[in-house]
Amino acid sequence: QVQLVESGGGLVQAGGSLRLSCAASGRTFSSYTMGWFRQAPGKEREFVAAISWSGSNTYYADSVKGRFTISRDNAKNTVYLQMNSLKPEDTAVYYCAAPAGTAWGFTISDYAYWGQGTQVTVSS
Picture 1: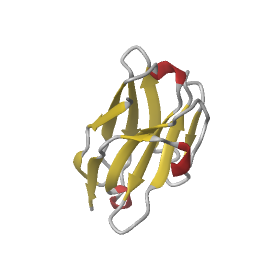
Picture 2: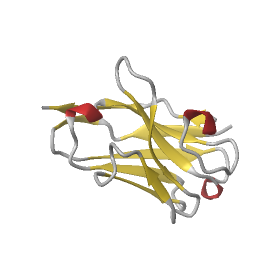
Picture 3: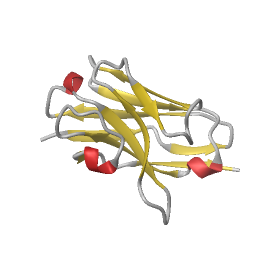
């Protein structure tokens, strides 16, 4: 059973930074793509970023490109999301996700396992 546990959320002022972490367990972490999604109040969950199993390939939503960086440490079974230049519109619950297989995907349907989420609030 794959388990994903996010941490690192909080309240930050606009222009500030946060780093989210997601600790994974239950299977060989280094074999799989990992992703981050977010869901703002009253909105659908949306893709934020993904990283390949080796970390050599990354992909970002246009809304966060240039501000957010996804990375991973396979020795620690952990994926990170460094968020800089935060904006009030980045306020959301952020979810770590993992696919069932080894596919590379950017949509909710590509991911089978989800963490419980961590709240990020950006004040103006």
